[in-house]
Every structure is written in structure tokens, then in C-alpha cells.
Image 1 (cartoon, rainbow, N blue to C red):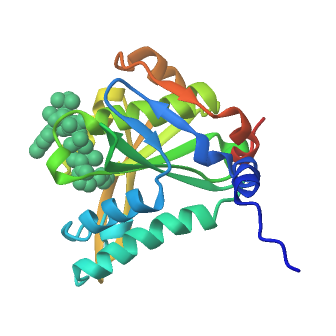
Image 2: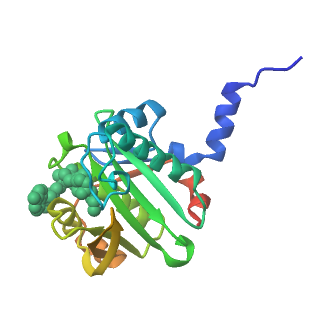
Image 3: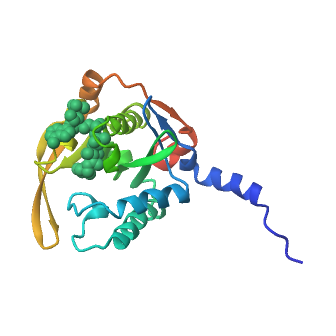
Amino acid sequence: MAVAPDTERAAGGVRAAWPQAGLRLRTERVELRLPQETELAALALAAGHEPYRFDVPMFSRPDDTPAERTRRFLRYHWDTLAGWDRRSWTLSLFAFVDGRPVGQQVVSGDDFADLREVSTGSWVHPHHRGAGVGVHMRAAVLDLAFTHLGARYALSGAREDNGPSLAVSRRFGYREDGCVHQVAAGQVHRLLRLRLSAQRWRRLRPDIPVEVTGLAPCLPLFGIG
Ligand SMILES: CC(C)(COP(=O)(O)OP(=O)(O)OC[C@H]1O[C@@H](n2cnc3c(N)ncnc32)[C@H](O)[C@@H]1OP(=O)(O)O)[C@@H](O)C(=O)NCCC(=O)NCCS
């Protein structure tokens, strides 16, 4: 007779195989971690109503309906999980304030073990913008990258007219590093590229303490340790 799988033991086994689920980055304002399915659903539904933006992958189709945008948001998140590779990884963390998901902070590394460069991208729910969440999210992932993963550089990109995104980068001392061009909906767009070195970050970082827990078992999955 078939024996039902022991779900308790299975959950422990999956945690060992997928330790990113236990990773937590905390500042006094936000907690960053991977979301549960219901938390992902809540933010994906809210993201469905976000207007078109060529510079954020999930919102990059001008003719999406809210349902399509929600699906794109979900697929983007699942892609980051399914496509994880220790050479090239993307960690799509959600930001929680008072236990509720309010934004997404992505940090990725391509050929990270060799290049030691990370790229970041972020989105905060419109109701929570302008209250410091974006700065705290960035503080958390920069601390992860520079202090704990040994990154040498962090890269970001923003439209020239994206005041809030550029302001967040400026708070940490990023410098302009040329530009990149992207095609979206048949149009060519220009993004400013920004670069922050570990040395500059150590010198200029705002005083935002970050607590990182659950990282040790993840290190091999970041291609280090
Ligand atoms: C960019 C984003 C993640 C920032 O998050 P946030 O929670 O609003 O950011 P914060 O409140 O921590 O900081 C916003 C900063 O922008 C500044 N700011 C706000 N509006 C601004 C404007 N129109 N022009 C210039 N600066 C502006 C604020 O003064 C603050 O800077 P300060 O800390 O030096 O005072 C958020 O605005 C967002 O989700 N935007 C839409 C998606 C997006 O653009 N993502 C980035 C793509 S490159």
C-alpha cells in the first residue's frame, strides 16, 4: 500500500535544498524576504493596476490589462525562482512593513563569483512611496551584497526623469556610469547607468543598520562560500 509522504519532513528537506526561503534582511523600517504564495498574490494584484513603465520589467507592456500585468508580475517572480543558478542568480525579495508586503527589491548577480557585481531594481506600492521604504530596501540589499557576499560594485539604472529612483541612488553615493538603451513597445529609450563601489559605499552609506539572518546555508547558492 502506498504511504502518504511525511509533509513535515518534506518541508524540512525543502528548506535545506532551498535555504533562500529562510533569508531575512531587516532594517528598523522594513523586512525583506521571499514571499509566501498569498503574499505574492496580494502584491501581484496591486501591481496589476500599476501604469506602463518601460524601465520595470513587469510593467513593460503598454497595452497590458490589469490581469495581464498581474500575470507578468507573478511570472517574473516565479522565473527568478525557477531560473536560479549559482553562476547567475536573481533574488526577488519582497519588502514588508508591519507584516504586509509593500514592495519588491530585486538584486541579481551575473557571473557573480568572477565579476562580484550586483544589479538592483525596485518597486514600491504607490500608497507607500515617499516614506523611506525605497531607501531602506536599497540599504538592506547593498549591505547583503557588500558586507556579506563580497560584491565590489553595485549597478543601477534609471530614466533621467525618474527623480525618486535617482534620489535613492544618490543617497548611497552612486556615480553616473554612462547610459544604456532599451527597446520597449517599438521605441528606443535611454537609461542612465549608475555604479557604486564597495569603497565608496563604506565611506558614504547612510546610517541605516541592517540585520541579515539565515544567510550561511545560502552562500553556496550565490556561488561563493
Ligand atoms: C523608485 C522607488 C522604488 C523609490 O521608493 P520610495 O519608497 O518612494 O523611496 P523613498 O521614499 O525611500 O525615497 C524617495 C526619494 O526620492 C525623492 N523624491 C521623491 N519625489 C521626487 C521627485 N519627483 N524628484 C526628485 N526626487 C524625488 C525623495 O525626496 C527621497 O529622497 P531623499 O531620501 O533624499 O529625501 C518608488 O518611487 C517606485 O516604486 N517608483 C516606481 C517604480 C520605479 O521607478 N522603480 C525604479 C525603476 S529604475
